[in-house]
Structure formats: structure tokens, C-alpha cells
Image 1 (spheres, rainbow, N blue to C red):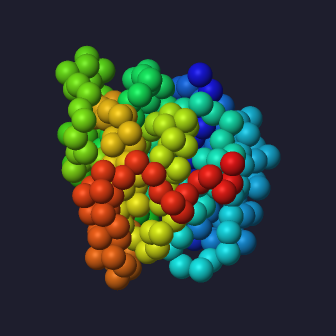
Image 2: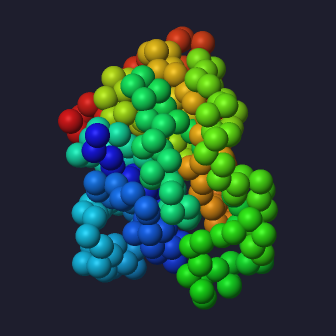
Length: 261
């Protein structure tokens, strides 16, 4: 099984640097890193080029012009080009525990997607975080909250079973799935513009198509770097798109990944 680590980013190279450092620190490396860049400036491109020279893992940078929040489009382009059978997806503000990739791969099963939670890095800790380039966090470390999510207890992970219901704990910043399962529903719905619901709507269509979910608890840990809340002016419209997918039992997006395949 080949794996692609998919990282979405937009104009925060300081955070992306820590994410890439944590990618290089994995106990089990992905076969490639895909960076889905929603229109960042040259500073991000330079950072990625530097890591392409330093890391053994191939890094592929997918970029389009900044015309507002168009994350669904750039994610589709990256997924379409993925060489991996299995895709592990995080955001560019989420530092990965050293066993993050290993944990997702260990629980990968046919016809199932995995979703994990996140430990929160507090705003007041950010100056120290970036100055020290900290990518490892113990349970009692300062600067984090929701610290019970920082417990890695593999035996307890086995208690979580598959479900045919979408969990309100599902987050697009910590999810993994088979590439074929995403393509089967035509990927992300590119009608989504602005923040909100693009990840959960994709999962809803996948589940309508027979894919089950499994929560990855006590494994697959990430650390979310605090940032200001994004513009949510499109949330109501995006919420309606998701409700439409639910009521129509939708399994396919008319505006999706097929144009890049």
C-alpha cells in the first residue's frame, strides 16, 4: 500500500514549516507529500522548495491563483495526481505526532475512512512554539489544551468500531481514506467556496456510497496551532449544500475531481 500525505495550506509558511518538520520526523514515512496550496505567496513556495531539497520524501506542490477560499479545487487537483493508494490528510497548521502516519496506516482497511481529533496549541504559546520550532509535546507540556487527546494508548484504540453515521467529531484536518473511494464520488464538491462543510460533505457522499467511518482515538494525534477564526460569511450557503447532499442521498458531485483525472 502506497500512502500520500496531503497537506493543505494558505499563506502561513511559519506554521507549514513545523508541519513539514513533523512529517520528516515520522516513524513511518509516507511515500510522498502533496501540498495543496490555495494561492499562497512566494514565501510559501520558497519554503517548499527548501524542503524539497532537504527531505528524501518526494514533495509535490499544487498551487493556483488566490481568488478567495477555493480549497476544494486545489485538494481535488492534488488527489487526482496522488501516486498513493491511501491518502492521509492534514491541514498546514497541524503538527503531527511522530507516529501519526504509522497509526493511520495501521488502521487502514478496505471500504473504511478514519477520522481523528486534535490537541490544541494555545495562542499565548505561539511565540515560544515558533522560536523553538517545537514539534514534540508530552502530556504535561505547557501551551496545550484538550490534553487527554494527547494520550497515545494503542490498546484503547481497538475499542472504537466502524459506523455508518457521520460523526460530529470528524475533522478534515485529521482524516484518511482510499483514493478510489474519493474518486468514486467525484472528489470534493467545487461548488464550495469560503470556509466550512467541504470536508464533511465529501464524507457524507462517501458514506452514502457504502464507505464506513472509524474514529481513530488514542492514536493518530495532531497538534492544531491556534489562529484567528477564518471568514465564515459563506458558511450558511455551504451548510445548505451539505443539507442538499443529505436530503438527496447524494453519491456524486457534478463539479468535482473528474476533470483532473
